[in-house]
Amino acid sequence: MASHPTSIARPAALANPVADYRLRVELGTSARLASAWLALGIAALVGSGVFSLLLVLARTPGLKDVFPVANFFQVALVAHVDLSVLVWFLAFAGVLWSLACDARGLALARASLLLCAAGTLALCAAPLASPAPPVLANYIPVIDNALFLGGLAAIGAGVALAIVRTLWAGRAVGPALDGEAATRWAIRASAIATAVALGAFLASGLELSPHLDRRAYFELLFWGGGHVLQFTWTLLMLAAWLWLASALGLRVPLSPRVAAFLSTIALAAVLVTPFIYLAHPVASVEHHKLQTWLMRFGGGLAIAPVLAALLWALRRVPRLDAETRPVFGALAASIALFAAGGLIGFAISGANVKIPAHYHGCIVGVTLAFMGLTYHLLPRLGHGTPRSRLASWQPWLYGGGQLLHILGLVWSGGYGVERKVAGAAQVLRTPAEIAGMGLMGLGGLVAIAGGLAFIVVVIRAWRKERP
Image (cartoon, rainbow, N blue to C red; front, side):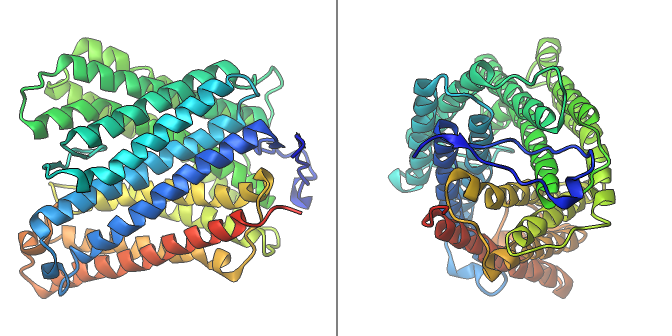
């Protein structure tokens, strides 16, 4: 297929001088690489969906006792989290990093994709390879066997190569800071943040003794870098929000200079991380608290203005058609879930299921933004356009199910139900506690249906070449 620029029709609502935050996508090398990364992300979601179904059933009253919960729930949780968050998010980062690059460094691009694909296969196979204890560390839980850890190492190496290519072959932002340039800067900043995260993982690994208790070892290993990765997801989500808003023709009262400045604030917070490592040992309380403080305040400073501008723009939504309805649904649901997750964060007290409710809300907000951008990008990458009724309903189904899921967790958290346990270990004493976890289970099943709908919509569009 010949490489040529894809024309971007400017919506009527953008006829005035309003910033357009979309990247111009060319059908060529960058689009093919982006499609390959997207395929890896979709494959990870398929695997995650299988584990998430088993995970929800393992915590749902009336069904949970069917499974060998003590080990089964934890193994399913490890696989679900790493596939649905780590691999899916990094794969979508690969999509955007590819679109932000020119044709240089193709060998690096292919090697990075191959390493990440091989690592993902290892993560899926590891639960079946040999009996090994799952370690439910924050951010990156693991199964403590060579295949799983080798898969993580392969993914890390692949991501490192992708970052090198992005920083080398990324198209220049340019002196004229328009909306597209602001998006390019956010994408480049996300690559720098990911590089800092990899450096944090490496620094922690060099400092920690491998003879530590395995739970403590992996918790400390992934704590610093895991916090930094949240900045990567945030930067990419903000870029996706503004891109989708422009695709819908929304009039966002945010100039490109302000948008770029907000990305710079988030990146500046990330660049404090090396100083935290130099100032305090990885295992110290000070290191732990500073990383938490940095994520809470550094990320919030960038998110709040963009969120406020988008909420203002959503007061007047241009007329939607079959192509834009799925995009609008994903953007609106993403904003709602991310905001809900943020608000729940202020209500956390103690180690109960309010913590995963907060985490789920924010992570699902990022996922929905990526889903919406997937719908928008598919025809621009040479595939079909998602126009079906299923595509229109999918973001609301997935987002609504996840909202019920986190509300059930918040409800149960108010009664002190512990996190990261299932079955009899949950100790559900009262009808209210059972009802809360039942609502969680119902919401989880609805969300799984929404996730399956997304995969169906994408596969259908993938098989149809754009006319």
